[in-house]
Length: 366
Ligand code: V47
Ligand code: SF4
Image (tube, rainbow, N blue to C red; front, top):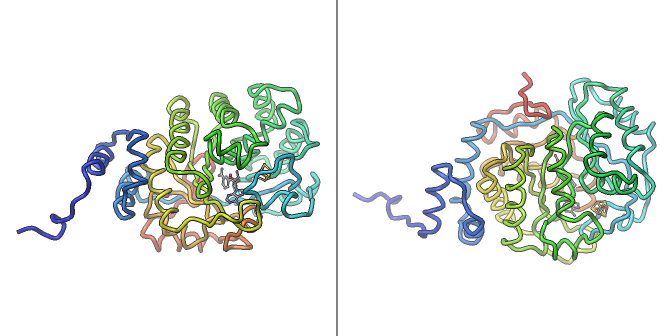
């Protein structure tokens, strides 16, 4: 006798994709678009879960970390930005002493510092190199994940250095890895429209590829839910997948939902939660060579971050300790992003997963 499951049919093209994913075969760009266009949420979640489970079992990773945002004074004027001085109407910059105070104020078990901020017109690579040296001098064991490719691109050009020369210098000063910011959307036309002043897609990708060749891992992001369509999202994922095939240097992919509070694109409504979960799931399925998919909880909120664990996510970033303003200014629910380790653990166990504290290279800590 037929069960109700036997009466459920899925279109042929989705069935072919499901079979491929089950056999751990790569899906094509056209199939990626089909997933976005036709894939119902439960179906996408199942496939993404399969990929996540195959790569990370039941583990969900988190890290004890904090952010330092050195300044909001920016040479660029991205239309989606609520953070830079152009929209917040106040200019501020931290001194080196203030940055070091923040480093010293952290508990001993905090393992990672994430530095990113605006692109300050006056600061060159030597300023940022010396900052790294001083941070390492103050806390040698801290992993410093610093400067998005957009900040790096500006400091290299300002100091008349090529990418490799600039990266080698920063590595010698203590740079450990590169965060995924500044990728936004690689499609050249939309990029020109929403953030035309910042580094090109080619520059962003070249900096990450060179970093990987020099032994420095990095992350990658996408800013989605604004003017792009599904083709643009898959084009973005495809460009990353190709770099990763060559280098294996990306640790995590982090989809960042466009938030519309107080920026030049405030007229664009934010996409639905369904769209958010689709973005996670398709990213997990498409980026078959990325070890981790991260939900950055200060951007999506704690509850949705928990739901994302059923759509391919295996990494919830970190404790943050109220050290970032990029998302609270852009409209995120948490105005003071803090997550204690016990909150993190109950959030993960609540989703029937195993919480694992990690270091920046995804080694398990206890
Ligand atoms: O590049 C700025 C995004 C990014 C808005 O590598 C916005 O582990 C949505 O990249 N709505 C910076 N997004 C943050 C970032 C990041 C965060 C957490 C972890 C890591 C990592 C990287 O924030 C920017 C931009 O894409 N952003 N404004 C906005 N209104
Ligand atoms: Fe500057 Fe970054 Fe804001 Fe663009 S997103 S204006 S580069 S701070």
